[in-house]
Length: 348
Image (cartoon, rainbow, N blue to C red; front, side, top):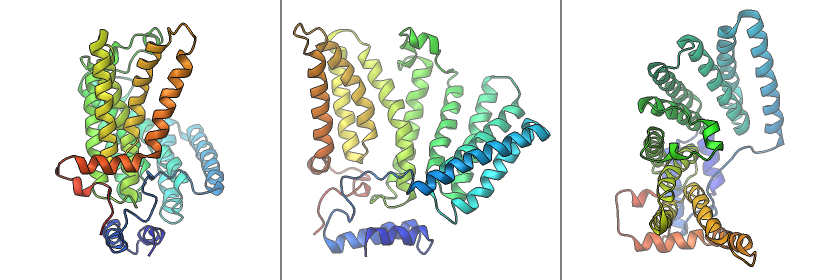
């Protein structure tokens, strides 16, 4: 039995995703290999063919036209309700029946847009903390209901966006000022401030949710792993940017050393959980350190040297990711949940 057969059976509803994961484990054990798919792949699927792109463009035009028609006929409230209803109805065909990835993402975005607009109209023009909390909480609930019914992994990404708004409101932090960021004012992102603390807590919560999905699909064959992928995309920047920027802003050698040590810890953690998003986020700050250190080279070789170091690192880690993970996982002691992470050695 091939990996594609198990995925098809789970997608068709013949077996549950839990049964598919257990069946995959049994097949792997009997076959005596890490996995039937490429062991260095991190599952990601945006669309399966140009037909999905074609349909998605049509859905965007259809939703825009239907929304504009509703807005002219009955105002913003009717527009939001029509958008929600149309996205839900279309998802029963394109998501549940056709199982199309990109159109499902488009419909999730349209559903979230309708929910957001309806909430904004209901809550009024005020931007007080209570309104933000209600907006974020109701948005999360709406996306969880959508995920429960349609099982679109991208719903977790949108739910995380509402969760970020809720976290900001809870800590009394607003979005950073664009003009201050352009002027170099990055103090907002330091962990000591309200916004930095909010992003840190949000990153931890998103990471916990992502690991909750990951540990239930260690072979990453179903929607649980794909849902975790989108949550990792939220968790990694929130955690890495806040922690590493806090260290990076320290003066002198201590800040540089702490940033590099933090990068090493994040790299090891990314390899352990077999997710590259954390490493990609941390790489930006290491690149900044190398750029500052090398840009004053009198021979004019600073930038090429910087590009060579980053390029060699990314290429090497990407190429030998599986080998590095086997060595690292065999070196660290046992910990709760280690056996539920993606396989890292041959099964005999």
